[in-house]
Amino acid sequence: MTKPPFRRPTLDTRRPTPSSTPRWLTQLLQWFSIHQRPMPWRDDPSPYKVWISEIMLQQTRVTAVIPYFERFLAAFPDVQTLANAPQENVLKIWEGLGYYSRARNLHAAAKIISFERNGQFPDTEKDWHTLPGVGPYTAAAVASIACGKTAAAIDGNVMRVWSRMRGIQEDISTSVWRDKARQDLVRYARKCNPSLFNQAMMELGALVCLPRNPACSACPLQRACVAHRTKRTDIIPFRKKAAVIPHRHEVVLIVTFETSNKTPRTKNPRREVHILLRQRPHTGLLAGLWEFPSLEMTSHKMAFSRKARELAKHLGVPSEVKLVKSTTVEHAFTHFSQTLHVFQTKLSSPIPLPSTDHRWCTPSDLENLPLSRSQRRIVNHYKSTS
Ligand code: SF4
Image (tube, rainbow, N blue to C red; front, side, top):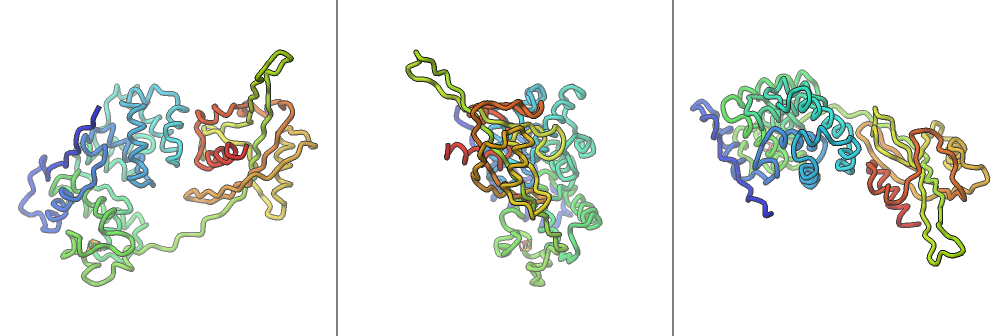
């Protein structure tokens, strides 16, 4: 089926622009009506689509989100389908997008909407805020874009645009600054269509008012912008230096054994590889995802190979079995970064499962189970070398 062409929402169709509207605001909305990027949720801004898109857009770029959004909508076209799906299916569709708590919260919120609210979506900013995974920004964005409510959605782009526009040289990461900005922005959202206002501010921050080298000559706010006029775009927005994030090392062990259906009469015996995986706990970081067994390095004095041997012993791998260094994978989370030192070992026969969280998987299971991005990289390396 061919997709209908993208329709640009017309300028303020739901609320007439009052005569007291400042010039910069009219120019901003005009700029948005011409320059906004087509996005699959913009053509039909239903609460379900806008909510999914806003959750996906947290910490993630629009270009990365679009294919995930389309895949997600194809798998879960409405909130009931999402609520009834097993969590593992939701995590699988989310795989690669990162920040998996977003997927788990989305799933939990879909159950609340379907089973506790009889399929009724919230209608106000306050009501959206009660759902799991919906913070102040997302509540304001969905309430304004999908429900037409007056609210100010303040993300990083909007903070940058607004602090430059007003020439505010304060630390914008404080809640005091954010509350003040929210009060100001709500006043302007009230003067026009809040959906278009919020989207226009975010789009301007994403396309024109860039963190470095803002394109002021192409900006509809140029004449009103204090930072531009006073040549301070390089020092505004001002933020306190972020603390150095810690780095962790972990050893990871790929434990495998092979089976074969070979008998004296089998012409082409089939060999099958079995790989030991474990599921992460159902709460906390990467909850519910599958991974290779691992152990964190608590002392930097110990050699990685010795730590891998300790992990092998913990899993029940016989001490005479050789461990081979396979690869190293680097990964960064928001609050820490890590290096995974991957080792591999081939058993001649299976060992008992170390706990009920572990299972033996086939290579095709590896494709179907939800894994984090770093674990997927280990799988890809394993497949390319075995
Ligand atoms: S004039 Fe420049 S600094 Fe001011 S809002 Fe526009 S792009 Fe940003």
